[in-house]
Image 1 (cartoon, rainbow, N blue to C red):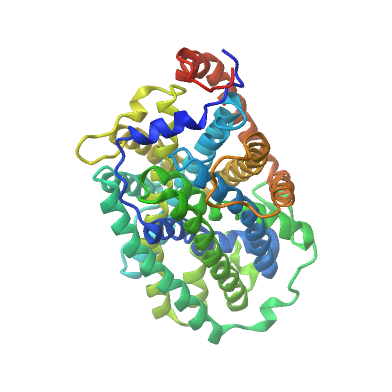
Image 2: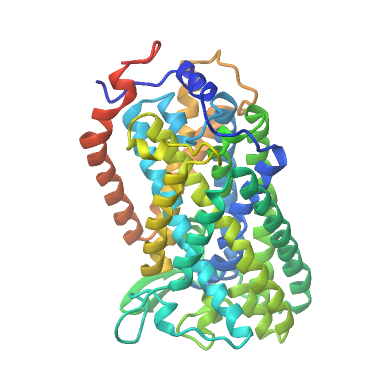
Length: 492
């Protein structure tokens, strides 16, 4: 009953052979899943909060730092996915290398990453949806579009659009992965076109004075009786940490390995390709946006309070190009749906892997015989995510998502190094070059970014991990299938 028991590769191979998931995803569908998750919150939403609260025009440097951090983790993810092409992502990788308790903690962290990420995107989508309605002179009451913590009126309030969009996405996902992938491919094409439009059209409205100073002097921002440091070099680093959840997309690719046609080759390709494409787009958009609109104008208490929720569209509005705002708002409103779709899909597959191993209840591993999806799993997730998104402010959700992402990336860098040492002869269709250097860099930069998250996010996230350890010892350890019926070759 050791908490460090390791699930052998042979057990993962046996799981793959009897998997009821349908292998319907090719190389480009997997890449589209990565791009679909990455392009969304980072470009259409967090550019405003990142510029105002953290880095100013130097937000582009924040995206570069975050991208570099991701490259190290992406290479490690790619090697793992070529060895263990199964659902579960970093959770499965840790279970096959370090041990059950370590895998559980990573899995619990991934729940934080994907669930909080889904909620953040749902709230972000609500902001763009409301702006779209206002363009057509439709105004929803504030108490139906604002969470209780942000509502300034009296009485009941909730973010109804955020609640409903989660339910819509769940209704798509339960129908089958193939259909969801086709919908995602279409949406990705639409929003990549919109991002390229923003970059090209925005070039004509850049005021270079908005980039001066490119790295503003460090100051303290006081808002609603809270104070935090912003700008300067520390602001660039904290900005990289704050916008980091936008890079969760390539991680989501690995969660779909169980439904990939040729996972050992296609998953590593999709992970790296989606990350490189989106990092370049992020850098260009952040430069254009902070050139079009002064970073101080993304102040939620200033003259453009809505700009913090839909910064790209508002930048074109202020430039006198309202027509462009229509295009961007429509693309963002539709585009964020695919981000939400991929995140919820990834979360459900992590639950599926943990449930198969007995660490969480079996209801999460039930596959619907017709759709080939974990239908009950998705419905439970949808109910939880929709309720929390309706009643929680976006700032708390985004920072906690970043912690979960950074934590998972750090653990993967550690685990792939350990597996290379313990089992160097395993077949690897992709190998990380100069692994010790890459792993150490990944561990160092991701840990450093975690330290630079807000104190609230750190405390809430660490509390979440403590709760996870308690759940493991009260349920997971006792119900582990590896503990009840040890698999041949498993470490005890």
